[in-house]
Amino acid sequence: MKTIRYILQKEFIQIFRNRTMLPIIFLVPILQLVVLVHAATLEMKKIEMFVVDNDLSGTSRELVNKFSASPFYVVEQVGFSVKEAEESLKQGSVDVILVIPSDFEKKLHKEENAKVQLLVDAINGAAAGLIYAYSHSIIADYSNQIFLELSRGLIRGPETISLTTTYWYNPDLNYKIYMLPGILVILVTLIGMFLSALNLVREKEMGTIEQINVTPIRKYQFIIGKLLPFWIIALFELAFGLTIGKLFFHIPIEGSLLLLFGFASVYLIAVMSIGLFISTISSTQQQVMFLSFFFLLTFIMMSGIFTPVESMPDWANYVNIANPLAYFMRVIRMVLLKGSGFWDISREFFAMTGFATIMLTLAVWRYRKVA
Amino acid sequence: MTDDGSNIIVVKDLVKKFGTFTANDKLTFEVRKGEIFGFLGANGAGKTTALRILCGLSRPTSGFVHVAGFDVSRHPEEIKKRIGYMSQKFSLYEDLTVEENFTFYGGIYGLSRKQIKEQTNFLLENLKFHKSKEILIRALPLGWKQKLAFSVAIMHRPKVVFLDEPTGGVDPVTRRQFWKMIYDTASSGITVFVTTHYMDEAEYCERISIMVDGRIKALDTPASLKQRFNAINIEEVFLKIARN
Image (tube, rainbow over all chains, first blue to last red; front, side, top):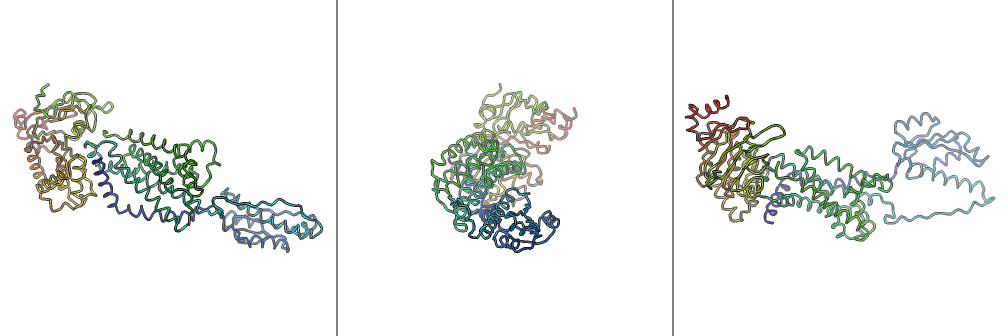
């Protein structure tokens, strides 16, 4: 116990004497949360549209007006050449082309049926889907309106079933309160995994590890002394990030914070053990960086921060069984947004406990006092 | 076995192989309690390999190695409590102050707060350095770092201290001071095991062994070695051995 105290004392002195450490602890979370939460949004705000209006009739103009009146669309250009429009699409200066044929109004009045063409830049599939859906609903609305005008009083439109939707847990579909907890998970993981791994391998690089290894220090004492400081810092980071989220983004905290921190404590043991393991198989900080980056990137992309895990292929779901980030990502959103209790997340909790135990054992086993 | 209790280190037929390369080939020697034992050899002769085995940092491939009464293969942690070590690569914490380094190492060797304080003051006063204990190690010249590292290595009063090329890269004045420290340490009852490739330093040792290509080619007092090889100094002895 006394030995651990001396190691902790040394670690904390070193951490806080390091000039880059305080900015990492305080500035990085603020920047990440403020910048990333705004940037990492899937909402479409400014869809740039090129209209090829070959009809130039009242009806066609009104259709274009419907688009420019929508908060989501900017009618960037109006022209007559599909070729020219395609050129803009290629250059990326517009996202979508609306082509109205020259007989649009005539056909509509004669045959009660007319066609328009929509060309969507689908490099980003998810965005293209959204653009299509938005455009479709605007055109459908307009088509309904025309139908009513044309049939004024003569025919009664078919009784339609109208759908009213309420979005639970995030009624305004505010993307920020969905993203913020996710980014917080990444932040806490970075601190836990990266910093502890770098710290340990630094002793290898400096040569001080050799001096440590000739002392009667016990493996567990050294590892606790090395990991505990970053465990505390990472939990502090979580609290700090939640405060920022509450103050600036008004994220809801529906569930128990105690439960969230309880889960985070176990989670951190798991990711820090991964960090420790990486540092035992590396001999320079560079190697640690590359290895941690590889794991982190894979973990993050598969964790479901941007895309729901459920829509990933089956094999990805199997891989995610071994992805601690996926668990924490789910748990933090469940607890914060839904107010889930212990029994709702018990499966994740026990899985994480098992994971932490295995990783810690592996890391401790791999750490050697002899070369 | 010649172990009558007067030897602190007993090594018999120590072999260390790295794959097909034999770094230590059947080393056999003893170090007596309280002596200054010089472990000489050219770079790459296998000195550091043997030293690391004696400190429990590396395991022998075969052979009998006892340090401070314990077998290195079976009880390395018992040995670690009883030895001090100063590595070739400088190993105090650069971002800690002199005093913080002493406190840390004293603490992990299980010294009490009072003992840490006393030892720190005693050792720093010997170095006439007690006024500068708030200085970061980073800010000190190499010679001072070496002397402080040595002081830290003997802080817990080990039975034997291992010094791996302790005077590498320091100026002659500091080397002289360093050897003064070694003498003081030995006379206080701590055995000193020192590796070096400065042949003039070997003259300061009570007994020396000379290693060439993983084997001990000679082991005796400097005076009798010079006599046996009909040489004026150890450097000549070394050259004569190395040429054969």
